[in-house]
Image (cartoon, rainbow, N blue to C red; front, side, top):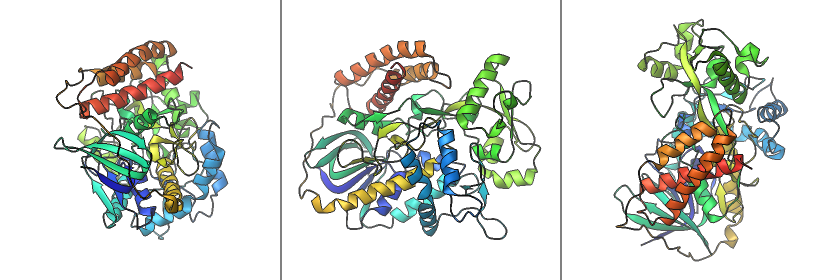
Length: 485
């Protein structure tokens, strides 16, 4: 038995939740959450949200210029202007929804500095801004009577129909259901689990990008992958704990294996250069020193200040045996963010009518080839609001009925071969890391193509292993295909 909704939102991070908040209250909305509600990349965002809001010494032109410089001038300038000029209204809105940003003693908002920014414009909640925003948005959405949220709802496939879209969903008890809608918003986050090491949560497997690609939507610049230069390096876990850009904004030094500063040899902006520049510098210094031992050191700062400014980072590092107030902390670049994705217009609409994409899975063009720190949460808010407004403007033309697509879970069929995800991650880590290796990419592409063809034609049981493997392999297939062009 299937259910019908006006709008289905796939993903419950900042983009998906904010879209629901901005959609008309008369619409029947379903939000599908892949795992538990708290598990999303938005909740992991530490630094903050960038924006010019009640900022006498800053202006939107400065913010726009910093964004373009960080993005290598490969940005969509119109999209960037939309982002920076509309930041104030969305920052104000989420404050009204209860988001609590840190303040100065005089009551004004405290703004921090991060790499690539020429002004202090990062609003933050200590070092867990994403969690603060996501939790307050979720709390508000849970009060909306027109919105249904389903946890542990794995979307296995999406198809377009004559009246909109159908989603094939598996719950935690292995029950399958089809849900139909007139409008769909993909807000499925990033692709971090395509790599061996990432700052992303376990859900970041590129599902939304895969669904859009399979339906024929345009995917753009998927090879624009950002590697954060200061992930905690314990050489053990796949999910690497991020040490926020804001730590360098507060004065931390980068040190090589000899515990010497080295950024002066690579960029005049030193530790406050944009992320791609710093990551490149670390890899080049690594080759020069023949060592992957690098450190972040802010121990010269007041310890009470550091504990108050970075409570989550301090606590997590203590659990790993390091005290950032007393010693350098081991770091190394790892996969962090995706600048490319499902290509969308200014309304966040994909190349398929009434299919929208918001947040990290989308390609608005605002980030260019490298995202400026703390622009991601802002992008999620601004462009999901645009998607909601576009949907609202089309309601008079919505169909009155719902067509349901057919899906097959292949119950009773064999499960996929083991190792596809692990092998794909190794290929991506080797071929498309900070400084890509085109030869390795060409070799890796052939193997990824073989795995993808097997998954598409193998008639396997459609379970979580299958869905996640197909997403990871498909994303790698698109990225390496771009690299070879």
